[in-house]
Length: 510
Image (cartoon, rainbow, N blue to C red; front, side, top):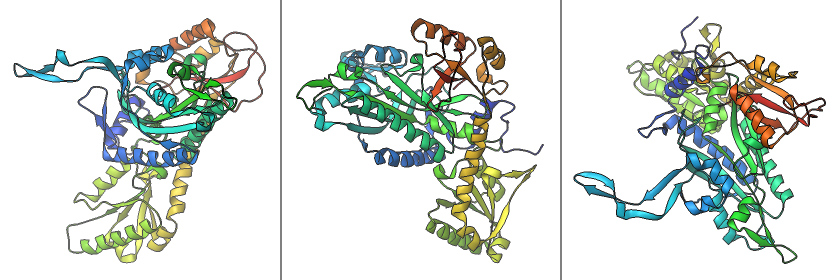
């Protein structure tokens, strides 16, 4: 087996491979604050592209961006009992506003205790609801459609870069509507925005569907998600959209005067995706050489590596690369010439690990002949050898958009085949389900690849649902969602024996 760019393969240990891919791909590192991360320039560049692409789609659907405070009064959170219960164990609380020097040491000043503790934003439904009750007076003010890009703090005990950190970045949309139909239409519209974005931009196929009652966002009437399958078979919840009913409106007194002059409560929604998407991209597309970043979110779609030799002819080589860069930029391509005084082979493998879609290596012979030699990161190898391609410079420039589109499509097709080929159907009993997934003593260490199972479901709630969730939890399984795209169903629910109403997807998850 030929040497790979990472020190560990996916087959040896998927969790360790993921950590190596993030580290050697120069995406992020752990910070001095436990559970938090430092996003490095290449990782931040990916997030900037995600922001730009998704922000345009959010605005195209009529939403406006705004910003709300990082700190939320505890009384706001406490107004919605189910909401506070859902986040209570994850909230960071600020109780004092000043330090003082005592014996040469900084300590909390007991005289600076806040009259009311402040919660560091875990999500913004309550503080945005407080603003909505001031902003909304009449049916003419509806629908109110806003979004914010922000950071969030949820005090996680077990963290993993991008996938689960104490502080993470996201966008959160919040809307208010006159009735349930309009709010539900919004909820499903944004779910579709997320689905299309994941597939078209991230090249990450997903299944959109509704969460069971026990997996709903705290305080929501309905929660919908997009679920992606990672290369180890686990599910990643890549985005959620919630219909909140009138729960938050009643807690925050968000009322409007309808056309008949009566006061009535708004129906609200919220929806969001986070930097977890970057983890999803890594685990969907990465290989044993590192990251493979889809062109649409790559900070640099093409990286040009001149093979410098510290000789006078290097100037001619640099000039050729600069001219190629200019031509590619004129085609709308994000391109970088990496002229650092580092060995070209080392630079090439640095960009392989980072997952730059196209890596161009230009030597003296290429420059003299007017050629471009390049590697496609999605198809780096042919057998055990690295595959390179040579084209005339003019042909390469003319076909560059087609090349990038081909890489984007190939990454999606590969991931789509994995998703479609690894959803097991035909399971009729819980024993069959348990036998298929087996047990994993320590799920973080990985195990044999298992995809998902699609099983019949009767939509139980209450104690019945909790009992089912406990049985699944013993196998480290969860119900991911009930796909919106349902096929005709007949027969009995796998868990209850009652008449099935739909199919649900079950799997292990991040």
